[in-house]
Image 1 (cartoon, rainbow, N blue to C red):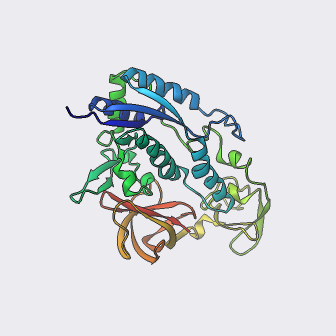
Image 2: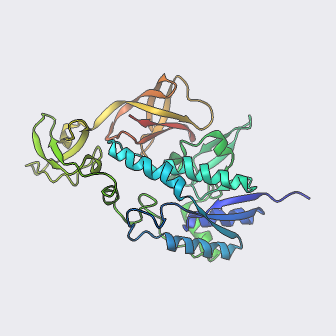
Image 3: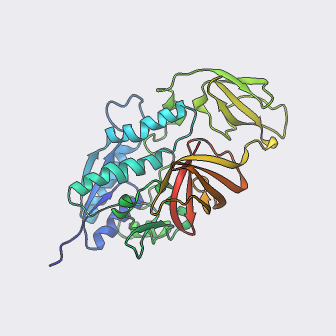
Length: 359
């Protein structure tokens, strides 16, 4: 008699992971649901206000009961603090704009949580990501775009390694969002009409600036324009990112023009701004670091398609390595306001190849 495969499903209390668990169960597998406690500890330095984790956990429990699986609550607070929260704070402190969702996938969900599931005998960890896993003739696996292109989340998986992809499953890859909700409704899952979460996962409705204020000392400084003239004051460089328009509190003295952030000078503690009409936010050439590949190593040089940011349309780019961990990329079309710390994801057709971090 063939042994039933055991699969661990990461359940967030949302409709996507609920249906992922349902489909895993209906495929005949032995399913164990897990809910990750991340930044919800009693020792959290900043109160997270209307953070909905208790409601999310209750929803996950109701779904697990409905489909007939066991749900465990797994404490990932220390891992999450080490690999997501601390790098997020340190990144903003050093003037960059990190991506916590990519860090969470790389180190926590498909890292520590997957290793825990593997140690308990699971053959895979399944999630509610909109992404498809495809097996190649040589036995390796690729990540490709899902059925619902409007919900494609492959970008957030650009830093997964081949061994992580091998252990991953994405049960809703061949469904659209509407089909996911319809299936949840048909099976009477409590999450069927639940709104998707927005913003940084562990903050709830707390603004990132309010969160960072508890960890980064306020250090006021000058706002200067491209000519070096002081045009205002800022309350801390960590409150701003390249391309930002709101929150500068400086007048352009023009009805048809406004200032935007074009850079930061950490040594001088100066925020650099220019008029949007000056086009100083647009650049073709960028240096990237921390190169990652999902299957085969990225070539020394190549023309790629890429997503400069999440949800950005595909752009054509020339890629050239300058070291094993760094490259120069040159876009055929200038890109607006790409910030240090953000991730570019590379593709060949619908296949995710890997990524890099803007310097």
